[in-house]
Image (cartoon, rainbow over all chains, first blue to last red):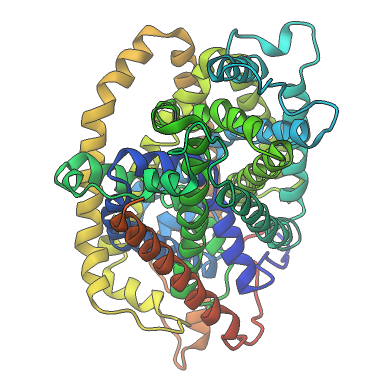
Length: 546
Length: 44
């Protein structure tokens, strides 16, 4: 065994932008506006901001704190860190979910990312004229063309896109995007992820500002429909209807949106924070990353998508578009909107490039936790760990690419790992932090190096309110969805194979963890969190252990 | 757009922009901590 310098972030701003980049994704621009418009418009913001303060930010703080603490003990992967914080094997093995989620979500997220880049390329390319929508045709016909293009492009019409003997644009872009991700992650935390996010995040903001400026200056483009104005479009998004606050579904929708949007319970923050220094502030860093995500979600997502759709499609068209979900709104409706818009191809290009940047800053964050896990569990170099990671993610991604009909494989992994898994991991994390590690110790650890001192109320929030809130949301979520999901799995062989893929990935990660446990014990590492971090022991005048 | 809609929009945007501004002000004006000697505890 030889000593190597461990990785760390180049700057505090770097880690904040990387975590923000991980959180900002397609959901900020496509899911949030739909949720808000369907759940009371402006009044949706009341449960939304409450969920931010009581659920999103507290879980985020717990993750940042546990990650930095684990890093001080020399660990960077969720299983090892949760083993230390959760003091034993149960938390350690549950921590495997913290590697599974980013890795399995990467299997399909990379495809979505490649669609965004391909659409941006088509819109910026003067020879392709966007995706070929004729804006003189009826809107229904234009919508059909956009939907056909998307289904053909993504292989949603049939399985086996890879094996039909043709070179598909989507497969070419998938290969490009896959390579970019691997290259950036291989370069490391500071030289790869941090540097890229420091450029990508401001560029994403500039693209969003360009699209926002165009949407807000559309006025009333069709004199035959004077009601279809930007002001009324903003009204569609923001006019409150307070009676929905009496409906528990609104509160669940708000909590769910905050939860998924902030990337808490995803296994990323805990890994990213493990590369911070002992005295780096995690409280302000945590709020800053969440606030940046909110800027993109509320400031851009809330101001662009619904008003743009409303101006050209009217109220009924916008409601119908929102009901088609994230992909329907983003890839089938908005291309129709760009086709009507003056300078629509350029704006469409900026829009999809912005979505690509939002996606790549997220996908990078999905690779790093698995990479760190393979490095430290198997004791291999970054190069070997990258090779293992590429092999696994390539197989998983090819599976999703092959079983593309109706995007069944994609949606199954998204449901069972990207949705259900996140709830489970968030609960494991907040229980480990507030109850096993202990809120007193956690509170003290959280305030190490902090610029601000938190109001004591948040101790109560993190110990009682957040876990309770999370359990209520989780039970309600399972009550609403789990029965349908299980029936769907029973009826579809592709869904069953997707579950098999998830199971095989879990098995592989558990085997790696078992190997890692043996290695760590042989090396005398404190993997059950019985001792204080080495830097704490060194700084004590008399030494000793707790 | 109704007056209530305008108020919701302005309040939401103001909250988010104020929060982001305060956060980045704190981050960018914070004193840089002294460099830390890091050691790898269990590398290959």
